[in-house]
Length: 560
Image (cartoon, rainbow, N blue to C red; front, top):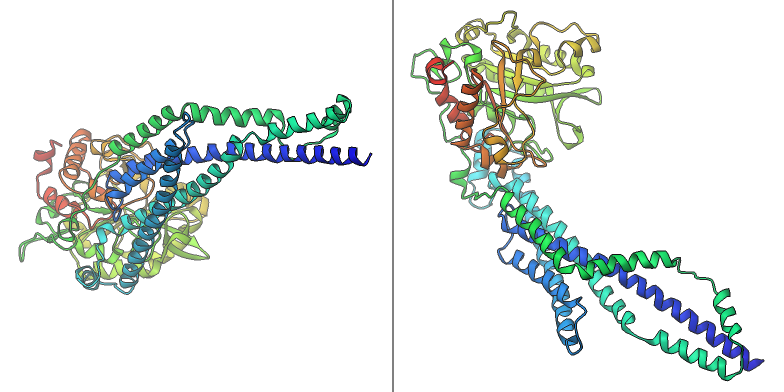
């Protein structure tokens, strides 16, 4: 009996060993699936590096990424006998270079985040154009405004790849360790030995059956789960080459469809302060920097416009739409402002979406607008406000306190006045709000006439473009505005994919694409583009193009 108990104990131990090996088997299968998926994901990321969309990424990095993917795939192949050394070498190289990639990507991300943080600290104290220019011209620190946001995106990309390679290294190590257990035949040997011992002792086969019958699995994996795991892993292994080519194709699509930019140097990227907005001769009539504007009606004039004008890197916004603050844009020549005004903790602020991403106190900015208009009596502004009904009363109060309500023009006729008339009467700002009449009713506020319904007085193009091809010749209008005689035309000219970026601005803010689109849309619709709205107005030709087109005769040039 004692001998029989030892034998049964040995059999139970053997079965426990079998279960442990099965668990390792299943674990290896699952890790194998994860490992291969990570290897495949490396491929499109490598192609993204080749596009040049990420600054600070060395040329060798995408080559190294492809090398890691290929060696990883070679090491996991079920080769013939005698090729074990090839798989071992491939596995070793793959893991070593994965660790190298972890170090390289983490160092690049850290370096770029540190550089951007240093620049932000320098700009935080700069308010005027002179102070900001002094920072950009400082040779002791590289604060190129045109690439700062691209540096942040590059750092985020490198950080994501660092995490990817950490996961690949861990899965690779686990996979190779677990894979060794899969290739052993110890389970078969133990079971053969146990069966032989039981037979030698004269025990009936029913004893063995009873042990198997009474044994309860504790690993939670039934036959169905095992089959699913095996099927999934087998598919990945057998279709390894096809999957690799598939992800290569995805990477190629990314490469050929991504906007490729050459940011160049500081001097030829940023047009900040390089063009003289005021083109008027001394003692000549002047309206928004051009003598010809004075005899034009409002709907015949181009107002260079800043999209999300309140969102700037200088003000510390997260994912800003501009480098410089609003007051700097007025001095350069921006005369149209697309802004968001909302109620945040009982205070009217300029913010977009979540105010935690960035906000500016409305009273401060409105006072700066009033100050600029007072100091420049020939300038006329348009302000397009995205609002909500609960903020309307607060917005009206803020406009009153800043003194802008007294300068606001109220459109009561189809025909707009001439620019000279607005200058003479000092009604030099037009205020449109997005919620319109319905918003005022919902808020229970009797809105004054100068607080005009935006979509009853304007119409616009689409505001969501993913690439240059989408935006280049698009003049289709949204159905939210009113295409009618005298109404103002807002041409949204910015790429958001998924957020604004200096590289996108660099791709669309320069001529000929900007000027050609303004002319094409004006001729196609038979009305002047009044508000060409751009992100990062300090990049490109928005000011120069607007002023040059403001000099032409509308009827002759556009055929209107």
